[in-house]
Length: 77
Image (cartoon, rainbow, N blue to C red):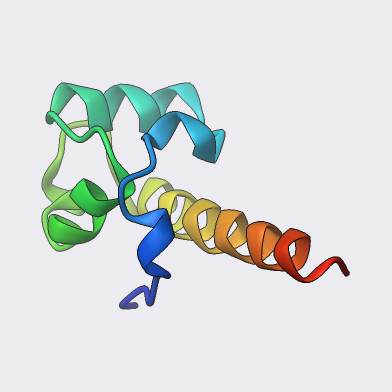
């Protein structure tokens, strides 16, 4: 599943996503610091130690939900 992300979200630190400790540790261990880093390496995610399908799904869902939440806030809904 490819993610379509707004430009203003790319440079955000992964800390804003509220990921599980397992997901955060796996990303940090692999030098992933921003959402852009995740997107650039999303095909590699399942190959990272301690990252399975469930963790990949969590990461993608958190990015999608974060973007949706910010869009709703911007529009004042």
